[in-house]
Amino acid sequence: MRPIAKALLCFCTAFFLGAVQAQELSPDLLVKNVTLEVVELIAKDREIRGNRNKLIQLIDEKVLPHFNFSAMTALAMGQSWHKANAEQKKRLTEEFKTLLVRTYASALAAFSEQKLDFRPLRAKPTDTDVTVNVRVLQPGAQPVPIDYSMEKTAAGWKVYDVMVGGVSLVANYRTEFNNTVRESGIDGLIKTLSAKNRSLEAASGAQQK
Amino acid sequence: MTFLRNILLASVLAGCATTDGDPRDPFEGFNRGVYKFNETVDKAIAKPVATAYRDLLHEEIRSRVRNFFSNIADLFIGVNNLLQGKFQDGVEDWARFAFNSTIGLFGIHDVASDMGIEKHDEDFGQTFGRWGVGDGPYIVLPILGPSTLRDSVGKAFDLYTDPVSDFRPIRLRNSAIALRLVNVRADLLDAGRILEEAALDKYVFLRDAYLQRRRSLIYDGRPPREEREPQEPVKEKSSAAPVNVDPAIDVDNVYLPRTPKNYEAVMAAQHATHR
Image (tube, rainbow over all chains, first blue to last red; front, side):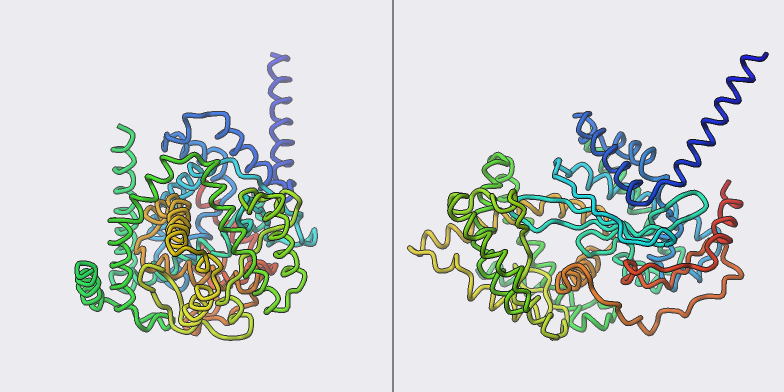
């Protein structure tokens, strides 16, 4: 009985320490650790690049916990967000998340071991909303900046927007979302998004056969 | 050529049907037509050629080609930096040109980047933007793609001053221009696939990305605070929405730290409902 209790206690302590550490991690270090881990995993596993489902699984495990998708969806929707009820918001977030993850998987598959330059964080320690700058270096071209907008939450730092080369991923959906909402309402947008996701799923399924 | 003209005509007419009345894009109907035309040409010619180019030639060789043209472009990137008053950047561009043209063997090796002299991205459209010229209406140019009125004029200057167009004999010049186009298109193959996947309406997605990208380039990655669009809602009083984070945040302004006052409460509520 004793050893088990002791082991359990150890386990719990380790767990809490781990959790605390995860929260205390500064946003730039968090981005660096996660990015390097993902890049290394992809470099190690030759097959993963071609296997979309495996890539998505990797993203699910390593990257998604650090994103705040409801904030991203709210930002992408702009004023239309307030027209949605709780259930609709949940479904929108779910569908938008699926779409973004799939896009992210495509981008990762195209990543060919360019050099990464993690910029020092320019923020006060008390800031709760910061931008973390990473740059992708490539010969013969200007470095491409990737900026993660992050917010401090009770569960650690969470990304709520990614800007690639100055293009905010979230803002870029706003016109599309608003157009769809104006034409066919919130439910129309949910339908459009889920149709898009299903067709992408079907296409990648066909590719893998 | 009549074939091309017919596609252009047909698609321009077809495109005139739909517009969403975006103030930045008053010619949306026409633009969608040209966009469709470009897509048709791209699918029929540019994309297959670029795909073959990428599959046939090793990345080593393609990067030499990329570097060669990139090096030539540095000349006028430098000019544009000087025109914008960024003297250090301009001198760096010319230093790049000097090193890469000599040690880098006519530019096929980007030795300057290895030495830590970074490449810049400038053109006349950006220079005019820096001088205070607004975007003007969004325009999709045939073959060349997304642009604005200002950037189209800039593009005309870019093409006029393009050193590659001075290559002689004419056949060499034409081959060089074609090779450059194919190389650029080949580099965009992955981006094109991502666009296909990410966008609900590719035209709108590409337009918005172009406008955001140009804005960022003009201010070298640090655009000033943009005026809030008038239809954006004033911050909602957070009584109902459990999932919030103030959708009216200036998305264009995320690099300036912002402190949402209700954050702890919102996150607590969110976790309570989700877990």
